[in-house]
Length: 56
Image (tube, rainbow, N blue to C red):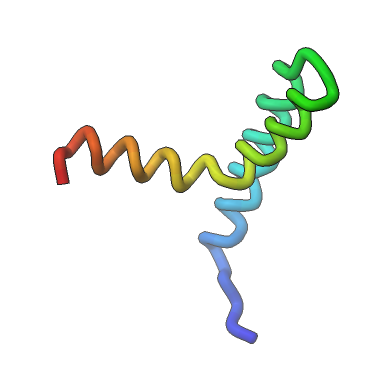
């Protein structure tokens, strides 16, 4: 199994930060569940918006 090193740690810290942010702003149980899903997939949305902004 290949080690992910530095970038795995960065993604892990960013995931924890996003998870805390989204769950704190949840107004109910299902909003919290959606927050967990958003915390998992936020890098994909970030890259999509960045590429859209750069018109690539």
